[in-house]
Length: 576
Ligand code: ADP
Image (cartoon, rainbow, N blue to C red; front, side, top):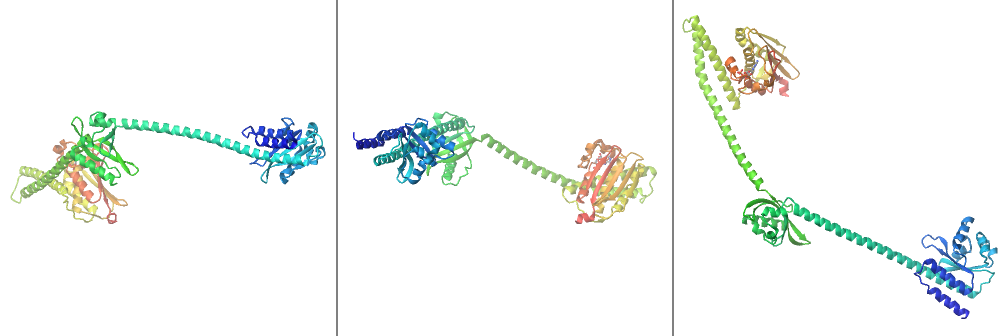
């Protein structure tokens, strides 16, 4: 084969190198063909990395496997880059470069030891070009000093540009393979994801089914025609029948005609969007065994896009609840009625007490008046024995009159007709008057009443009613204090109130009764009324009077008698 043909065959061999081979193998094949064609001893390929622009010797032929690594090592040792050598010039200019004698090349110094060891003299550096871009170099080495002919230079230059195409294609090919690999991995992941999604869907479907089936409340779906499509166990229990019996049956089978109308209206409202919040309705259900039960139902329309495909429903049996509600309503009504009856009975009683007391008071007052006249001997002389009897009549009529007046006060209190005449009142005067009035009673039991009254401002109140309060408290104190006891009345003012206290040395009041004694008709010991007289009304009247003065009253007892305290607001406090 002549030289020309050999070169052409070599170029065609380079062009048909299998680009799916290992990259290094491709490069070595190129180098081998190039060397064999021009009888060169060895060759190398230097490539520029596409991404980093880093320059590396990628392959060598005829120089030993470790040659590329040794070249880099030598550059590192000399502290220069690979482009320090002639390859730097070719990369920069894009033109071939010939080193005639490697031992004389100043730029080859870092690699001189390798040149010596491997024994080459002339080197041809040719650019590997893609268009105008230099992507690397193909260099051929001759052991002897050699003058490269133009043919040789042309051949190596063409071989280098073919090598550039192959490198480019091979790079594209490996990129494509990487992409395919990535795609495959992505597909694998996608498949995994779809599988997982299906699994989750299946699990949630199972979960939903379980929830649906085992829910405490009846649940169902109807199609648009009102026929049952699904129903859960609670629903079957509520209708007292089996699934086969319900599925496919029409809603009307299970509702009273009235409830069916209500149900249809509810659906209508939901379709029109009026009952968006799923307000429940109570329907009367007819179970399979004929039993009627009340159920509270919520429904929701099922839509697929714009199309309505059915109705979801959830129900709750409210039969017992409704029965209970009805009972409560009836009970409430009865209670209201009894309350009204009681109010009426109380009104009649108050009316009666008010009438009867008036009826009693008039004759009693005249009995007392005439007895007093006889006692005072206005109607003629009476002997001592008769006077004693008349005295008993007088005291007993006083007690009766007191009792009747108390009853009258109570009935007026109940009618809210406790007429008050308010004005400026001197508490000191009220106390003096009460003491004076009660003196005979106290004297009768040899009880001493002392007073300790500081100068007091006048208060705003009803003098007569306040006198009634103090008299009542004094009367009780005398009543419940044994012979020769003492009663002390004190009165003083504080910042906002006037405080009056009446302390006795009587029988005292148990601690747990201190507030109860102010209740109407309350007496600590029922036998008191027989022993001491009274009807348990006095203190409750006192409390009402004090409270209508915006004041307060309370009792204290330490076992050695009792103290009754009254607080009345001062005039300026009422004004404010
Ligand atoms: P009564 O007319 O029965 O005295 P009150 O309402 O005035 O009714 O008093 C109610 C009860 O409070 C009395 O029955 C008595 O048990 C008790 N009580 C009232 N004042 C005193 C007191 N100073 N000492 C002891 N007990 C008293």
